[in-house]
Amino acid sequence: MKASSSRAFLQRQLRSLVKRGGVSAADASGSYAVQHLPEWMAKRSFDFDRWRRLWVERNPRNDRADLARLVMFLENVRQIEEEGIAGSVAELGVYRGTTAKLLHELLPGRRLWLFDTFEGFDSRDLAHERKAGDFRFDDTSLEAVLRYVGASVDVRACKGRFPDTATSVPPGETFALVHLDADLYKPTAEALAFFYPKLVPGGLLILHDYGSGAWPGIAQAVDAFFADKPESLVRIPDKSGTAILRRSKRAAI
Image 1: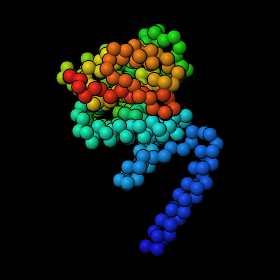
Image 2: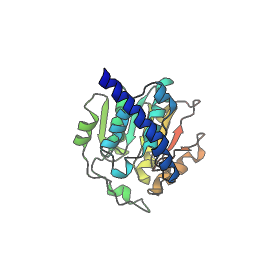
Image 3: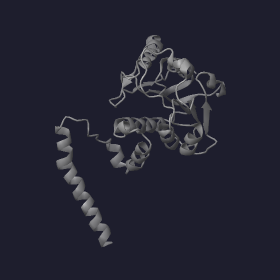
Image 4: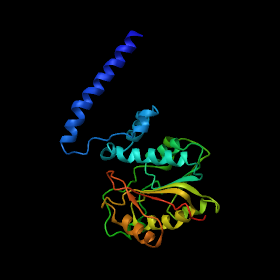
């Protein structure tokens, strides 16, 4: 009991030192090093450390500190759950499965559709790019992703080029959350045309790399698609310029 009390005291002292010294120093440096967590997490004893460990364990090195994006997922999934918004979850651009695993664990029991070639970009999609990054995302496989995300009847992995693989989705399927991280113009444009009509009222469309500038085809496809739609995008201040759209609650499915 004594050891436990001493440990708790030392932890409080350490947090106090970090608060008074470390946070101020990082903030004064001008670097984007400090991320204050939402107050509800502390009030509900939310286990943020668990999700942060999951977030960093397989993320590329330059994404490990992108806590703004992690908190964005936590906040928006919480909203979906609290409002009782029904529907499946989908991700286009799975790569090694970090976000897929996060969504699967945050929204257990929901069908999770995963769309990817699981072997890098399709050359037919690269032909539409004015500029392509150096990454090819081919150091992955369907088997490795499924091992990591976890075997479940709720996980439906569709290997191949999108939208060819969209034929696996039943006609009546609807989605509460869709995460698009395809990097390229063609699959993004195809995904918007496919998923938007299936997004339930109040459902979320999360668009990675919209404002990053690294993959200009994303903003091109998104801006063209939503030019005549009633919804607007909200930008998230994360590393890669994520944007979010929430389907109008007046939308008909």
